[in-house]
Image 1 (cartoon, rainbow, N blue to C red):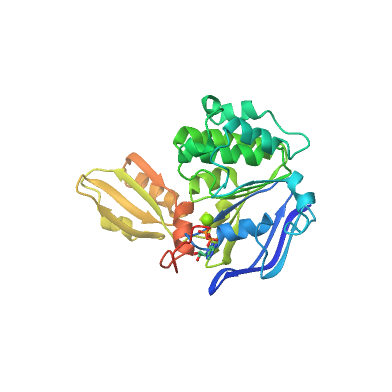
Image 2: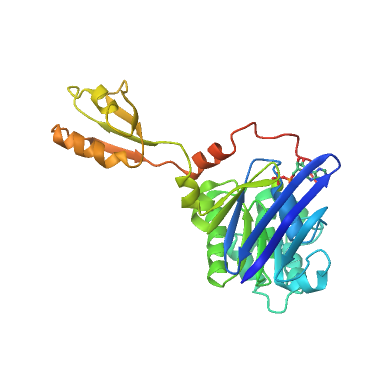
Length: 309
Ligand code: ADP
Ligand code: MG
C-alpha cells in the first residue's frame, strides 16, 4: 500500500523555485531517505508532505488524505520533526512530551522515550535552555511519541554526537519493526545506508536519482581503491596493464596503490599469486554513497543562500 503519494509537486518562494516537479511514492513500512545539497528543496518537500506548506502545483496524499486540508484527519497519523521545531522557549521537556502525547490516541511513555534519547535529566528544563542537540533529540521524541503511522524527520541526526546518533538509529529501527513509514532527510551516507530502503537524491528541486543505497553506489563511476605492501622487485607498471586497472603506482612508503573496477580485484589477486607475490596488509576500499552523491550532484553546492524560515 502506498502511504505517501506525491505528484508533480511544485513550490516557489517569490522567484526561487524550491521544488520543481517532484513525483514520489513511499510504500507502507518503507524508510525513504532524502539526500541532496543545501538549498535543493528537501525541507520544502517534507513541509509539503506534512501539509505545512501549500504546493503551487501538484498533489500530495498522505494515508489517502490531503495533508494541507485535512488537518484533523492527518494529525493522529503523522509525526513530524522539523529543522525548526518552533516550540515555545518556556515549555519544559516534560510539558512538551505531555502536550504532543495528547494529540495521539495511543502514545508511548514520554519519560522513557526521553530517557532513551539521553534527556532523562532534562525533563524539567525549559526548551529555550536546551543545547541545539538536546532540542533536536526532543524534536525526534515528539515526532515518535504518538506511534504515528508515518514519520517525517528533517535532518535526522545533524549536529548530534555519535552516541546520540546511535540512540536515534535504534529508535528508527524500532519504528521500522513496528511498520511505521518514514521519510528522513540526512546528509550522512552511513546513516542512509544503514537505515533506508531507498534513497531519493534531490538536486535543484528535482529528483535526480531514486534507488536502493546499494543501487546508487553501483551507479557511481568512482573506482575501487586497492593497496598492499609488496616486495620492491614487483614491477608495478605490469599491474597497470591488467584489464580493469585504471592506475597503479608505488607510494613513498613502498605500498602499491591501484585504482580499478570492482570486477578486476580478483584478477589482480590471481595475477599477483601467479607472480609468487603475496600482498601484505591488503586494503580494498569500495566506492561509497559519498562517491555516488558527488557523482550525481556534480556542480556548485548552492544556487542561492538558504533562507531560515
Ligand atoms: P534544503 O532543505 O534542501 O536545504 P529548502 O527546501 O530549505 O532546501 O530550500 C529550497 C530553496 O528555497 C532554497 O533556495 C531556499 O533558499 C528557498 N527557501 C526555503 N524556504 C524559504 C522561505 N521561507 N522563503 C523564501 N525562500 C525559501
Ligand atoms: Mg533543509
